[in-house]
Length: 404
Image (cartoon, rainbow, N blue to C red; front, side, top):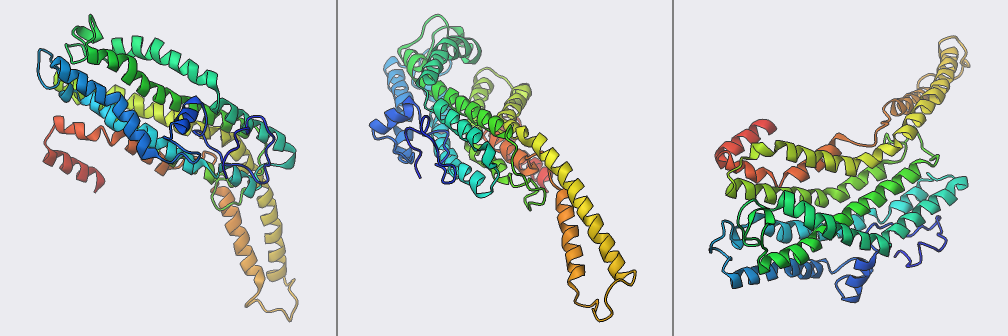
């Protein structure tokens, strides 16, 4: 089911909820639809990747060739040797676009899961609907994307890129240090077209993650109908933690972006990979916080449900165990009722299993596999840079030593 265009203002039928999507909305999405680079299901992803990537990268190639900075010239870093720019526009940017489709498909049944599992009480339906409408309204906001464009040009290009990211040497995009005294023609396209396109898509993803975190916070304030004996050991909320996998492609894109930046500094400025341990650790922690952090909003309710379940099932187990004891060990059973084949023993075992499920219920909806998947996806593009420190044979031996 498609999300109605008027979802931000119209009432929602939460017994037959619409698809939930962080990406089907906003001025850029509408522009892509009008230019036939997207449809209502966010397909045509190949066309979007080709057109947007070439718009950012191809003019840089042509202008660098025109200015003689393609593979030689007087610059220290010719265009074809600039690893960061190729990784940014030919790897990370396509991944940012692909991540939209992955997240959209993964999150579509989210609202339906809440309905099917009866997690939202009838008296809280209005609050749940308000959270959905608020999320849709933010996602569709024109003002939000205008502000993002202002941030991209005012902070991303003029401050972060020029003073913290640009190489401190003569390159194909600038004749002076740190993006400095003069931009080349290719540098002007890079700084005012290509880089803003990439930074806008990246900032747009951070805004979507904010919408996701805000939605989870609002839902976590509702008293959910959690079941302590649910087999998922999360009271029935395992489908929310399952959304983590949707952000794996986004994590790879971040890892690729950092890997490209570090590669330039290693190959052109003589740096070593170990000098950037802090930067790598900060990126990993940052992604863990923005992707996994919002799930912790449900920890108080899960802890409360576990305490309540332990108390209630403890009382039930104690009562049943006493009755079982009185019946079968204190001569309370009828003389003609055989012990062999009695359902009482199976019921006692089933009750014990239910009590064990309550005891094993997790109060943090994050699994070890979730952490490893996200960390691995982030570090995967950076691992090849280890070859700058050792041979491939040495690297494989160390990897096998860790794994086996």
